[in-house]
Image (cartoon, rainbow, N blue to C red; front, side, top):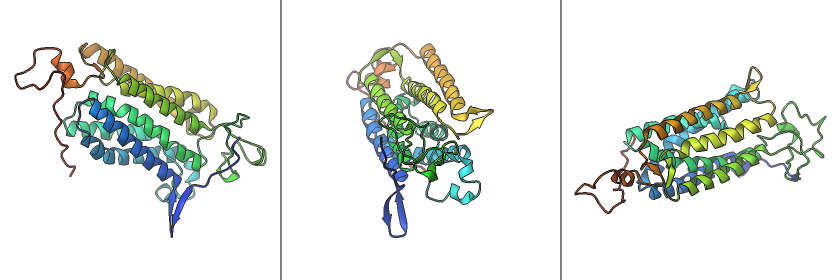
Length: 305
């Protein structure tokens, strides 16, 4: 059992506190950059797009995630609405961040004339890494936990951070430990990222380019759907956890995208093969083509103005 209850502040710089949640978000973005640039190189794409796009996508995901969390946990903000926009921040909702982040992702891909399916594959394991690292901010904020448990990795939650269902009067701080749902999501994220990078490590004839992103959404949504059964005090519609409804929606849409790709993409358009290499397999190379299977360097991204 873990009896230590963390504090949200990592470092106090005079009057300015540095919160562990922000540290976890920053470390997650670093993980995104490292994984996405590696994937971009594997697919023969310009890694400069990763650094340029992360700023816009990261801000969009932050806004959407914050909005989802505030709606989810509005009881924490209803008496002081300024807490919504002022630190310390108490959390982000993953599904809100996924929706707004994806909107920004598609916008940038269209603006920069990128192959959207290729960049779906590049971004999918990076999103898993962001999820896996960012979830540790929940640990330091004492969030995202489930019912009392006797498992050896159960965590202590102090009285100020308890949901209404688990008051200290009934569940004493000294003897009660809770299920670390954030840890389960983090482990799932690392495992999912490793699996997707393995899929992309060589050509997979049964998978089409772009499949990795819907696979990621299905994986995450199944895990989140199951974990929501262990949560209390979360956002619900007619008694159903909203996150479970989002999970079902993401699964249905992702299955539709997979079906669309497998019905419309040519057999040579497979995971693990750069798009230009796949297209070159469908016909003779042009006189100006480079080495067989080599993708030409992508143009530099135009600046956002």
